[in-house]
Structure formats: structure tokens, C-alpha cells
Image 1: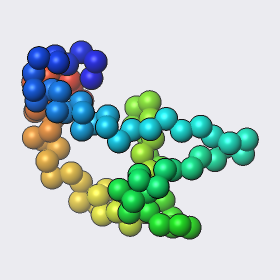
Image 2: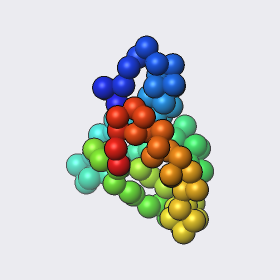
Image 3: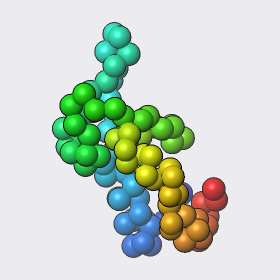
Image 4: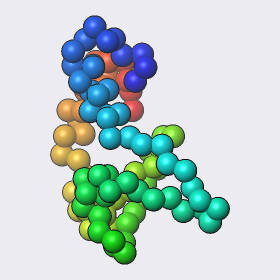
Length: 93
């Protein structure tokens, strides 16, 4: 992402969208972390709800279990379009 041109408005919008919600969290002594309320709301995760942690390069994503099941079962319908657009920025998957 750091290699994208800031002169390109689409690249700026992509980076802004991709990074805007990211947060650095610290684990407690028992290896737990608290997901901030705004991110729990965004992910539609309630208290004591089952979640799925997915690896995404140097970060993790926290999903409501039901939403992950739907997403993983259906796949992302736009993945081909997204891959093509990213390739235009020199990013290959």
C-alpha cells in the first residue's frame, strides 16, 4: 500500500478505506484483547457471541461467526474485479 501513488485519487481512496478502521490492540497478560466498541458495532458482534479470527498478512480480522460462514460459503463475488483493479496498482495476489 505504501507504494501506491498519492497523486492517484483512486489509490488514495483505496488506502483510506482499507486503513481507516484499523486499530493496534495490546494483549493482556492472558493473551486477550478487547475489540473497541465501534469495531464491534461495525462487525455486528455482540457480547459473548462466537467469533472467527482470520489471518490477513500482518493483521487479524475478527468476524461474527455467522457472517464469516456466509462470506466463506459464498466467496466474494467481486474478487476477480478487485484483483484486476489491484493489479493496475502493481499489487498482485
